[in-house]
Image (cartoon, rainbow, N blue to C red; front, side, top):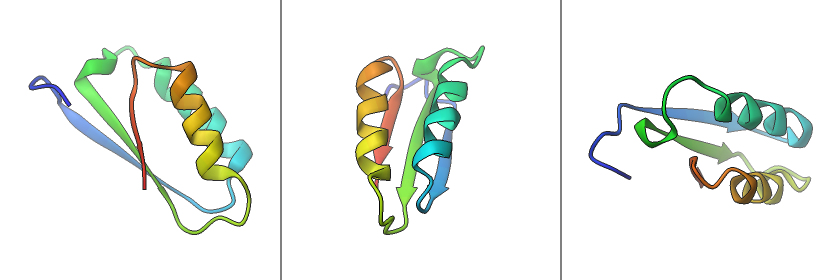
Amino acid sequence: MTSSLRCSVIVPVYNGVHTIVRCLDALAKQTVSPDEYEVIVVDDGSLYATAEQVRRKAQRHPALQITVL
């Protein structure tokens, strides 16, 4: 986190492997600079590879501050 952090975007997800990818792509395209917000993805015990998909997406968008819980 940086001192210029303006907001946190909290995204709850459950078995949303396809939806979360689109969501994170949209967040990466925001006009707000990526160093001004963080994304916290809360995986509520998904049965599929949702958390792993988020981690892969985070690697593809290194400017985004993505945390998976």
